[in-house]
Image (cartoon, rainbow, N blue to C red; front, side):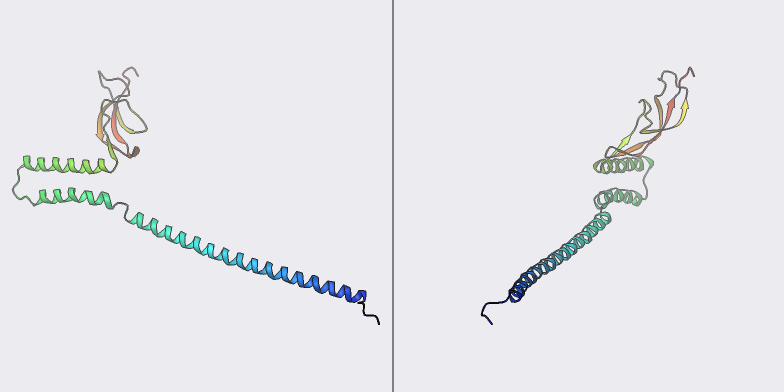
Length: 173
């Protein structure tokens, strides 16, 4: 026998080398896949934690959203309470106290973005007014608001409640 390797041994050695290389590539691919899976799981957990934190923050914001306005309304409630404590008040002093309390309430409402709609003498606007009746109103243009039964309100320029109004009708109709 010669000392040279046979073609079968050469092929076997080449296959062993290829297997070793493929085994190394497989090990690196498995390690990369494991690392990618762990990263994905960590990111998924972080997203879930952020979602839970956001949900808690929204719940707290919803729970305490009215805190500022309610704190401001305490002054109005205190004024009403003081008015009720007065035992021997005449009608004029009660009226004066009610006017002051109403002014305080209007100040609080305005400070929180609430604006009154008092459209007396203005043209009817179906977006902001609700016509309750139509009347003949000599001297008034048709479609003009001649009486306000209930003020309307805007909250930060969005209609909260329409004004209830009486509108002048067209006398020729």
